[in-house]
Length: 136
Image (cartoon, rainbow, N blue to C red):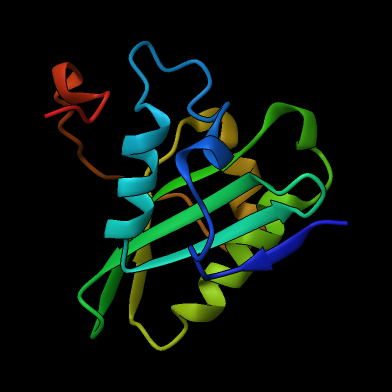
């Protein structure tokens, strides 16, 4: 059974293997842990035996009016079981006191986010792909 937590206690890079699928230059598990640690909020989906993270969502926020959700991922073998939806639900619950919660996503996943109460909107982005691995 999957458990959900907002604590990083006991999470090590070894528990974060297999994420960022399809990224040409993904962050290594050590940098992934640093991303989680640097986030304003995080929710993890944990498989207890053996202990490993099977999904996560992060947000960055000013804590007053807005937040941005940069990452939501579920390991391939756990997709389709409602883990991603539950991660979003739990994160939106944490952020319900804010005026705006934004995220950017590809068109093919917009229907997923619509199902959890979000709506399409236009935005602009800048990407520095040389820094995609998050290495110094």
